[in-house]
Image (cartoon, rainbow, N blue to C red; front, side, top):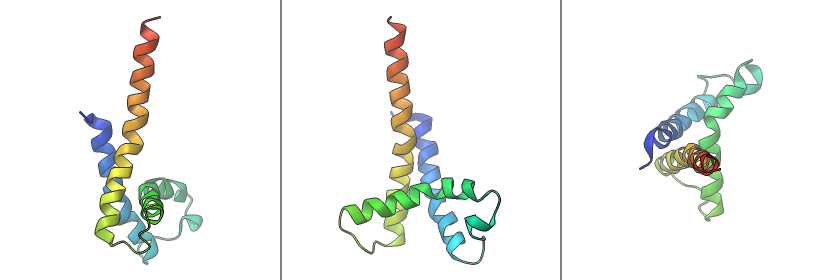
Length: 96
């Protein structure tokens, strides 16, 4: 039912905590010091949105595993919802 956008989004959401941990450690420099830092921020977006979701539901200090799971769901939905919207609009426009 989810298809490839859901799978790619889930992988994106699972990769996000790894990149975030590497940025907070000494493995990767800060995005402001790297010319391609904006790409790392784009990869880190599901983790940032997962932190926002956790705070919004009232969990001030969730575990890393919980953040990774929420990041996977957020990443999957971030790609799946626009894809489904695109398909809906495309089907509607064919009928005209």
